[in-house]
Length: 294
Image (cartoon, rainbow, N blue to C red; front, side, top):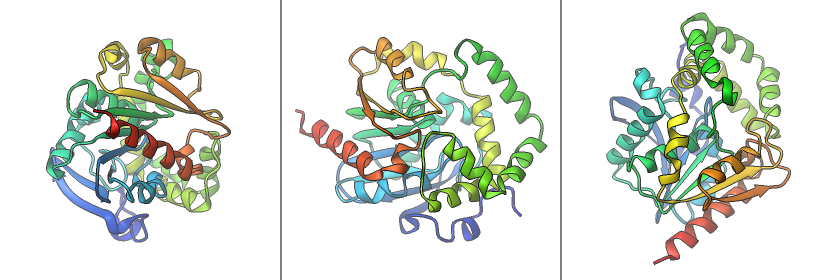
């Protein structure tokens, strides 16, 4: 079995496959899905996920907007960059290169979990100029807070051991292991979603991308720079999120008091997969409001 997810095999029945494109930008071979017409909405998934996480949100948004959803570098069917491309500024640069190749400029940037940090870094660095950034259960504070440096060193140690991603993939080859990992986020998603995550988790190359991303991640500069964010910021929080404590949104709001917080009752970290209708309606509401402003 190949180390990386293979489109002819793993992508044979990929959600929204008809909207998939493959192109090279910024030295990376990208898998990206582009659908619909109208104002541009950028969707960025979180660590260890891929475009499948937007499988039910994308077609709902595409009725009213142009939706762009890439597999982030090292994830899914997008190739692995060098370590600089897996830092937060590096990933922001690579996504900018992809958007440039597509000739699209987001009006609304949406990031789930770590994808929210990428969207915010892009906006802070002037790589995108959306009217609003929506953080969906955003991973915006360092893992372990005061112990963040330890976690980063530990992740780098793990990445340095080539058998680690293969060990993780071997464990996740059991579908129930993947299902349990997903339940631990506080979300209950459908069997189709579990199967797609399990399919990716079996690929050591996909898990290596997630681990290397964690090893190169540093959120402290993002928090330092956040007060100068120009676009509006909406922090959407799943009340049952067991991965990112809902209280973390309050810390972000302390840094940027004009940020708004909206809580989704009974939903967990994968809220957009549990209730894509609710999340899509929320995003369309924000898009419509932003586009109506002079």
